Length: 346
Ligand code: MLT
Image 1 (cartoon, rainbow, N blue to C red):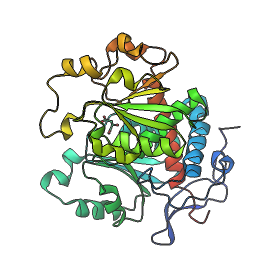
Image 2 (spheres, helix red, strand yellow; image 1 turned 90 degrees about the vertical axis):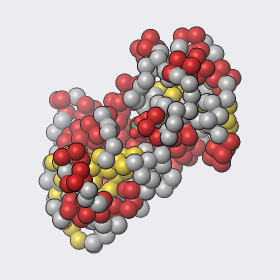
Image 3 (cartoon, protein in one colour; image 1 turned 45 degrees about the vertical axis):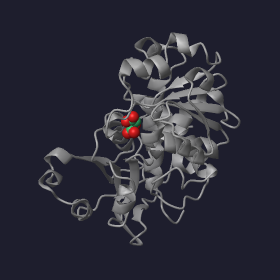
Image 4 (tube, rainbow, N blue to C red; image 1 turned 180 degrees about the vertical axis):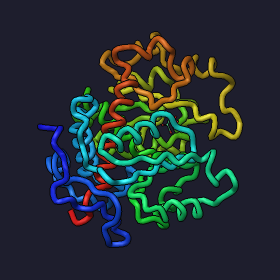
């Protein structure tokens, strides 16, 4: 596959289907996207994994894998989103997700605007709807949004013709994180059919856990939630998963140990005595890893609380895939942005 070709061929426009007319920005239909599996996407937006079919997930993972060679500077000549404007609208802090969306958009030739909440009118009390109307008046092609409230990206979609991509909404969903995680698992394990993944820690507050459980189950994997009862309450059985409160038993038969960050910012009051105490019972280290099968992979979405969810030594272990996750994040976001730029008439 020649990844260096991709200039405009017929210059189809970035479509804003809610308005039924082409506006701003151009992208190329040539190159990688034409070689992607031909799946009709119902939407250019990405709000939740729950909305996606298994075929759509597979198509996005395949597209992401095809974009990976663009991490090599020699191949960085894509123009799929040339002329398009992507606005990163992050109301919550982020290192990996925001940076990786920015790199992904730029590698596809888009112009990226990082909306700075701290120096914007939001800090003067502007409402979300007024902020969106203001941004909409500047005709962006795609808005990548993170917010502390569940459903905020879906709300924003009602006020813009741009494609909207959810980069994390409250404790609800974080779809691109799940896609990059599953791509990383798939690289090592092949199909996820019949595989077992233990998601460990603060499941209760985790949008990453929710998006991952939907994604993994759609791909045929079995999921367990493992952690203290405060983080893994009985109500989570509704996800159709097994619950385990003992780490060693919880990881005994798994293919992937997926650790979650303790989400202190979403806890009204601390839900465990200390980081040391949490690590003693639920932390992964050389000793507890021995209770898992020898092939079991270790993952974490980051940011990591070293010495709490995982000890520092394990972070460079050959089975620890944290850096691969980050690298795959760029490829997945390229696939998601390229999908957002596809013509809605297929
Ligand atoms: C998130 O935004 O949810 C992160 O990717 C994971 C975390 O913050 O723990």
